[in-house]
Length: 295
Figure (cartoon, rainbow, N blue to C red):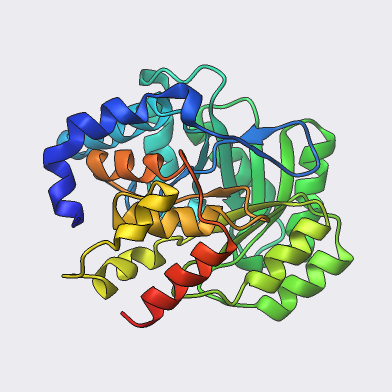
């Protein structure tokens, strides 16, 4: 099924996404916190201007996200006006007790880190963050010090590091072994499995693992364009390519949550459905990986 076909199926997908008993939750970062396995990223998709039509579309994405049991929303000062838009829309969408707010610090300058975090908190309109990360390890020594201070002050619950596109894995491994961190955010998908050793190391260290780019920025859909979903995907309750791709990611035992981004409400419904039902076992994961490698 192609993603453009999902728009016509949106009502059925939304109805299915509202089934509360079917949404599992994952333990997170040496704590009693549990997360739904599918979260929401905002890179590019929430960087919109004053276009009221686009803003309303993003509001519907948020509304469906929480209605489907979603929790983690991830953003960053790097993402243009995404944090501002979240701050405008979240008060208009029911989400009592469900939001897990995750953002990042992203500046090469030591002294700008604290003020950037303050601005992010103001933009989101929140009293504290749930997760704060050093974005792409930029100036991590200074910013981890700031994040630890915020954690001591009760202004954030979990801190850690992020990287993407397979970058800086050697440095990530060193930090996982030498620093006390709660969360690792990293790229992992069917086109890029290079982070697997780091996922396992993070799990050994008791960290929460959040996956960015789980759909490879949409490139995975290009790889299967024109191909029919294999019948055996139904064995792990995957009924679209997006569900196959996301179920493969979140079925890794170390993964707490994946954060696919979308601007299309019907795609949001499709993504959220990946968090429910059966997940692929080890043999099914290998089969799907081999199938995609041949695409």
